[in-house]
Length: 286
Image 1: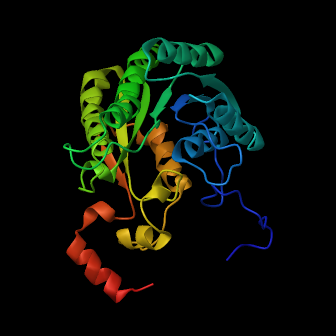
Image 2 (image 1 turned 45 degrees about the vertical axis):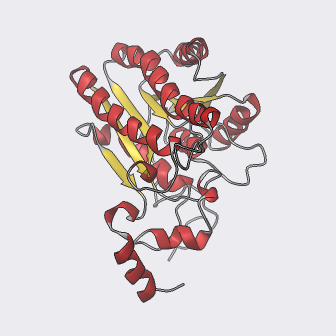
């Protein structure tokens, strides 16, 4: 129950009594952070960018669309945050390098990197999958993350360390016919551990959020709200903010001793099996 002196209206990202400034002084580069100008359904990248800003970070919104990046920047302004826009195709070496350089120049360096740019598709059997769709998904989900790490890690080194947060998916470990999407996210998990090993002694931490069936523009393609609720042991449907908050933790100094980890953010979907979930859903029907 809310206290009488608490405001009635809470921002959508509110979790707890104190908004906090857990990322004060951090300079973050977030890929795939543009949002639809109408703002009807929020994706993970823009939620992370906005919440980072609300928590005190200066945030570079990296996206292929200027319109979408500007829409997120307006949301950052609304929470009193500090952000810049950098636009380019992050799958291309020159664009990626330029976008990172623009962000680092604007902020005087970088401390946090979030690889969130993602594309669905390229699924089904390798016999029938569209090869162009396969290549496009691998380029956005994996190659762009590799290039972003290539160009941001020198800035983290110059800062004396930092945090890289990769956005993975339960599709990497649970067969669902998602093809290239599953392959790209599984590879991102492998790179998470490898980058953590390669740069740990430079005080650069690398972790991955393994995201379940959240209600986002991409996640809404994976069934109905009932399907998403019944996929996890909590029986609730997650939204982009439920992924953004763990990203805040991994970006902050609170997680200074955590690296090389794939953290499920999935309402327990990956903690059990289909037979057990069938029994659970029979016990707690909608």
